[in-house]
Length: 484
Ligand code: ADP
Ligand code: MG
Ligand code: ZN
Image (cartoon, protein in one colour):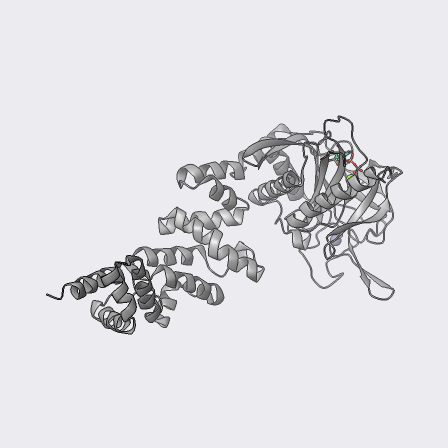
């Protein structure tokens, strides 16, 4: 089989975080009883008039700036005409030839090196409703989502992305930027961030482009990566058979981990775009742009660099902890409070990430507050609890949401600081394990001490300080070797 290179262009849609919809006062919120957040405007009733949502426009300006775009001062809205049951107006208000942002870029890190991904455009449009096809032959439409402000971000042609890893890194970075600047919640599983990769392949070394397919309905980073991989292999197989790639839109079957043909795209769709007559052009002034720029929060790259210098975090940790704003805020609060940034990073990326993952939760809804995590780390640092107990404690904190000190007292998890009590336990461990003790004292098998430490730990249910145990074992061994 010839060696092929993937070529990938990304089209991403982000639902914007605004109180109301794009052109009416209806609430912009995920879910809800179907068709309860609608009005004549978002239902597309004849004669109703759209009113522009300024926050949505500013969110797109913010995004354009964060993605290093030029902002079109003469941006305007256009009508994209097509019929679909989830689009009651028969057209979508979008931006065609003068989008808000153009010619931008973002940098991704893959395999330790930085790569610049160029962005062609960032534009503003409105979301459609949702169709539900019930088993049998019934279909329903929910128009709560109709008219929700939607931003589209498209990468440049010729594409910079040449592997599924790069595509994933692009999406991770984009999501992180969008959440940092607060324009989108980034929830892929709720459809707030949707991504459609355009995929083609070409023989390595070739500078022409193959026919592309577009993959729809990918709702996780994993699906994006798997979908692109699958598509590359499928296309190579088609080409090797001497056949042509059909230009088409393909869906993603997550259960089968396969793409499947949805509709052919052989002919360019004719949308009859024309300037939206019910809206004035945007007229974005330099003053407006500068006002948005001046209020721009810290971006992920800057925060990552700061985490490396200010908290001496390893590159890997700093990158992980800046994948979303909520995560990096969480880390920073905990790190400041406990005074041990690396410990905070370890707990967040380790035990806490595992618990959140298992519970299918985001850091923002985590029942362990950063304050409680910091308190827990301090309980370890000041010797109130052992590392072993901390592992159990965090699970308890995750389940109950209670403050760590309260749990420690209620469960009696304080480290035993009473040498007398420990000595009694030690006495029993020595008596129960004469062979081990003899191995150490008579055969010099010092490594077997670890077993005795483990036995004491077990007897105290992890509530002893290994330092104390080791000290007491040393004393006892010395005494037994030389009882005088
Ligand atoms: P469409 O109109 O079909 O959506 P666009 O021209 O808007 O296509 O391109 C969508 C995305 O696909 C862009 O990111 C673009 O760079 C990328 N793209 C265009 N041609 C190819 C190709 N042959 N292979 C892979 N990606 C492509
Ligand atoms: Mg497209
Ligand atoms: Zn409405």
